[in-house]
Image 1 (tube, protein in one colour):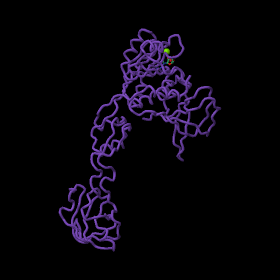
Image 2 (cartoon, rainbow, N blue to C red):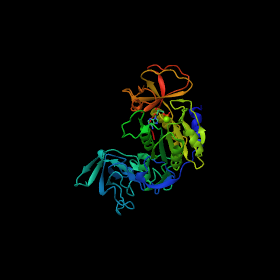
Image 3 (spheres, protein in one colour):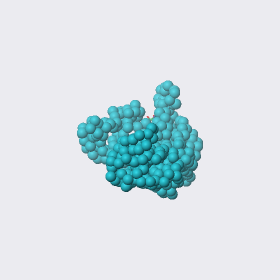
Image 4 (cartoon, rainbow, N blue to C red):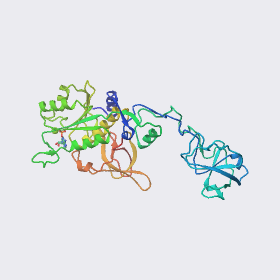
Length: 411
Ligand code: AMP
Ligand code: MG
């Protein structure tokens, strides 16, 4: 049995990021940049006003309160080369200016409209009373404050969040190069399995894993390829596995333990799988296996029980899918939470307990283990948004104690 840290070393040692594709920026959410993005222009491309108010010369208002002549109006779209429209700035002048509008040549500060008073005139006053002096540069964002032309604003390897997409858009990157979404074949093994729209009879069980894994793969921003049910038959398994290995990743569930019909490891090997993990010191999920083929397909063989398959996906498959998409070494890191309830002692394996974490009124993370009744209990797992992580060989955990948790469903 290997521990989780060794498991990550073995998984990451066998993953190379996959190929890249160009997509329109709006399709890049939650994908990983494969090529960095540079500013195409200085941003902002001109000195601009931070406020609605009046462009002035600081020297003219040093003795404020003073009244200045208003010589014009500069809107945000006013042409940058000459916002003042050919007007040569003379002492004692001001121009009305809007947020984002270019600073006219001759002005060196902006006075907020709230600190002024119009004198005479209509919409555009003839004069304006400036109440207080200002420092040169006040409320001016200088050209290239945010970035210079050619400067990298998003590095390769960046996960495209809404904020990152906003930055790319500002830099003019209407198309971006991201890693392709890996396709993940989902294969459920077990002669007892039936599709979920069937009413199980006798010893039959609904193939819930396929749908759980389909959702997990989507939530990891990869492409699920559901391949249905295969009975515990070596020949049929071989054919299904061969077809599934055309994908970037295979998640196969069931048939990986010590049972008389657990043929998956043996058939995987016949299909060219080389095993890197064959047993893990975790609970649930001891029989989880990780293998690769010479073509670079990653294979995760997960136990058939829904909770074990879920834990196996969260611990190994999700970080592997991130690494395939160019975000390497993203080992899920626990955070601390206060336990509501109790937990029993652990033995020689690290335990992962499905749990519900909430933020208390005073801002603390409070975590409650779900009352799931063993690793077959898909219903007990349903409310999980975290897993409590318990090291091997620790005593009972008491109510109020601090425990480590992994948050679920992170990109
Ligand atoms: P196995 O890992 O094949 O020994 O299966 C362990 C338990 O999980 C058995 O009770 C199976 O019936 C159940 N099981 C296996 N595959 C699935 C599946 N795809 N969906 C739901 N339960 C499953
Ligand atoms: Mg089975």
